[in-house]
Image (cartoon, rainbow, N blue to C red; front, side):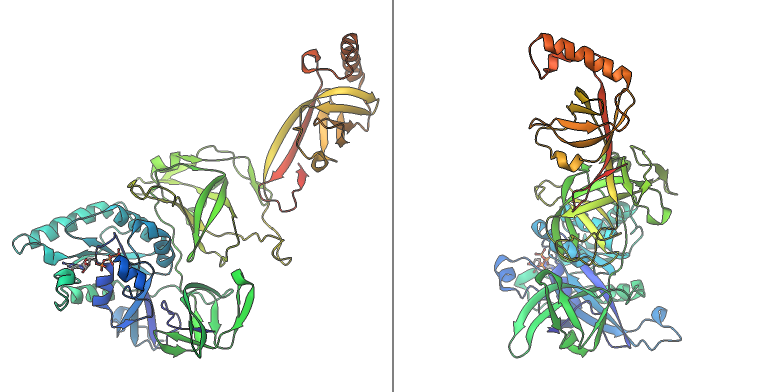
Length: 550
Ligand SMILES: Nc1nc2c(ncn2[C@@H]2O[C@H](COP(=O)(O)OP(=O)(O)OP(=O)(O)O)[C@@H](O)[C@H]2O)c(=O)[nH]1
């Protein structure tokens, strides 16, 4: 197995620093044209080479390309020998239906180029890309493209107006005051193939000054997000992608978890140059979320981890105030959270606030405390430790003009299904405390009563066998097992029935006997019914389907 053209290229030579730049924006804003204008090296899947892309006239998957410059002064360190700065461009699709690919691509970027068609301004997917950028990367440059389409007379004023408008929009985001560069990536459009791009030099200068030393962590298990996979005759299977965590060297054996196979790494390349080692690339951030829909517990969301998007049921459970882990949301969005306060995380009872505790930061932006969530995936997904998790509602109508990204977070602890592997069992204890109430139906003897109304007819009573209950007359009991087929069950009372309970049950017995019916109906139940109360913990995730008594 070889890993050709690994774009985000960790692996570069020791004297080269790789910096990943995502190119995002609304469909047809000119992202691919910009990638082409600014790059000198193309990978296998760049510049819409995919025949389907050419047929449909839109970018369908991620395209990787690069160019190198001398290492800028501000990145030079006395103790290192960095000579070259390589910008790797990740050209993302712009069509609304391809947002999963954009989210996947954006998770490997350090800086985002937000491309805007200067004749159109902010469009729906521009806004969505801005949200993705806020979640995934640290810096942004706005690129106003197609300035050649503006008349000579109005060009400068239109660029200035659009720049002001963009900076106003970005004021409340982490990209406030970011650079705005005007370009024409492909002046004249498709009809003028030979015209030289305008403004690229200024863009390159801005890129150089905005570059920084990205955080790279080579520790932890090796996890690789594959974006393309194909066969090369004589070489075998080639996978291109990005290292999300850990590192890998030629000769290492890697596991492809989804296929349950292991393979040996034969060779690796970055933009066709052989390398011997690859390390992690991902930068983890948490940003503003503008989702306007309802985020309710137990609802299903599309969850994206790396390049994979899987449906999962999301259970929110409690609040935790940790200033380092704070997420900013508008009050409007935060108010729509449906919190379930009774959950417990690792034996610690979570505060029972029903609304997030609100703080305001220096700018008056409301900051709700962090929210724990349990994700139950519909099928297995490979998750690197502490990876970025983005939840979205991708079934929303793409013409609805709304943001589909709902929430984001960091993976805290994986819970592996024991059916898949015996090596890891759930460590996280997430359960809900449940109270159930029924009534004592009749006395069998001094130490046994039959109860009903607590469990449904179809409930598996054996799951409740052995759990402790309490009668409203004070006796403690233990569920012994089912009685008949209608949801009734026997309760054993180790200390026996109290006199009060015996009397109440005797009165009741007489009333029902008079009607000639050995099983009292609901109407014949006297008002003095004895209640049976059960309190237990139910796991939100419980592969063994255990009931745990509080
Ligand atoms: N006039 C003019 N046309 C441009 C410019 N840049 C791109 N175009 C044209 O705009 C159209 C879309 O360009 P692309 O680069 O494919 O746009 P894109 O944003 O990558 O498109 P998707 O990835 O499908 O969203 C093409 O016909 C380009 O020739 C420019 O600077 N000026």
